[in-house]
Length: 372
Image (cartoon, rainbow, N blue to C red; front, side, top):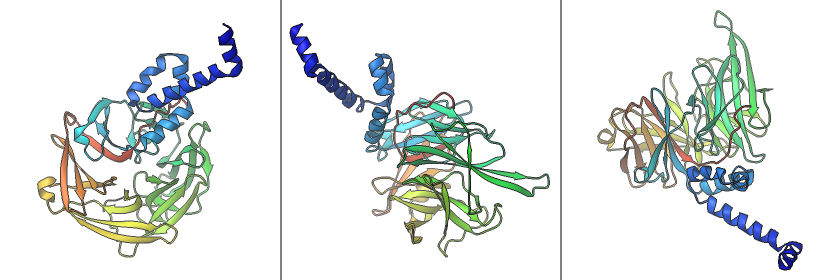
């Protein structure tokens, strides 16, 4: 007893406990998310550690070194999230797990979370790793939404635009709102000094800025020139960037913004294996570089229209077929070696009515509140 009292007075016991907790955290960060979440029930100490922000941030940082390929499979009655622990070779190690996450994603995952919208225009923020989602307060006359992450202040934000017309279809008003996850319970109106009309679903978030395709000087999908809008998540300010003169976007053309070797790129969707990418080399100077890609064995691999989903760490481009029939698959193309490969997902295509693939998803253990 005397020795125990001496240890308490000297702080040795606190040091031992601290070392024990540090060791626990180190072990937990190396476990898969499913195993970690099950350990919450072990004790109050384990629960407080796992649900604490320090551990959540540490786990997210570790996960960012091993980005995943995330596939959202849409079935008639449910949704399935398919994970791969290797983007480079997803067929070698992948798992399928049912997650009841409502709606359709408006953009790729952002810092471990996704944002979705359903047919009733309800907006959700979800953590696909944990299978949790948060329903945001309903906003009337919702037209479009964006999702981004502010790395400086560690904040997730959802931006929405409302568009009200009269019975004749004439525009009455356009307003912009923002919802900050965890910091507020209502939408907050913000000012946009750049009239524009988003023409793509969602956008792509990079370094605290969301980029998306729109028509400028107009609130109509049929008027104004095409531009790329950049929305700074921290300052909540909009800016317009002109497209290269050689870019011609006609009605019903399908273009999207993707991540190409760490940069933002505008890409057209192809039916014949020929793709043109316009890569934004300098955001401030608005300098673009055109890159053309031709997948020579296209008909043998796909024989259908596909979507380009960007590049992965190997420099390979990833393509997702527009329509699936019996089996789900994706196409990897290495432009340097001019080689393509098709990767199938086993036991995942039965009844699938649509699929959406995302690159560079990182697993997050962030716990979302049940309600706002």
